[in-house]
Image 1 (spheres, rainbow, N blue to C red):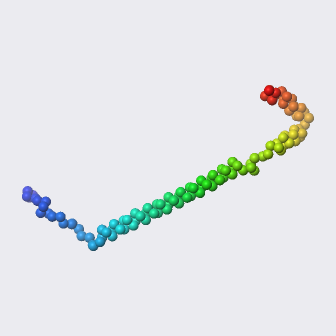
Image 2: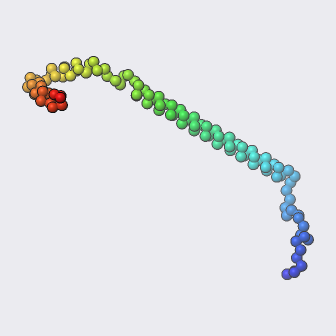
Length: 110
């Protein structure tokens, strides 16, 4: 092996050759792919956001429908009439028992 090896003699030559404009074209292609991927990702995220917002709006409207819908609330005017009608349908013994229990109820007499 030579002891007089000099790095300055090697020089700064490129070990390979490329066509003219190859690196510029490669850079342009890479930027085009990156920007295309970003726009697809952006479109995908906005689509998911819109679907989530629409689902949330539908769920909120259904919840409001259940909370504020007057169809689910029965009027209290009919309830006493229904109780009296059910009491009238009982036999005399059952009516007497119900009245006795009602009169002996500790919480009702307070």
